[in-house]
Length: 77
Image (cartoon, rainbow, N blue to C red; front, side, top):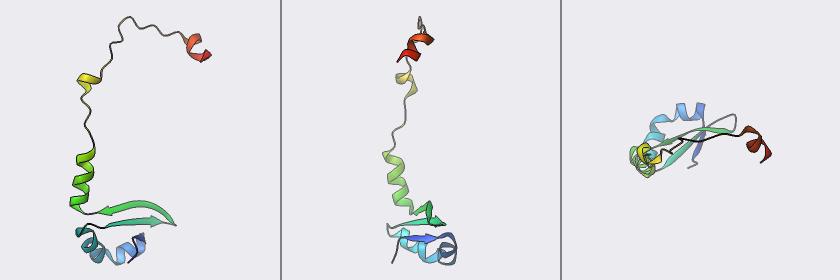
C-alpha cells in the first residue's frame, strides 16, 4: 500500500488510514502533488514530542549590560 494520498483519497479512506497508522505507519497527505500534512499514530507522535528538548530560558539568557551596538561596525562585516 502506498504512503501518500491526496486529500480527497484520504477523506474517502480515512478509517483504513487510521487503522494503518495505529500499527506504527505514517501517511503523507498531499494537495496538488505537494505534501501538506502527515498522519501518524499516537505512539509515533509521543516519540516525536519526547525527542524535542525544552529550553530552559534561565540558563540561556545572556548578560547584555554595558553592551554597545556600533551600526557602522556591524555593516562592515
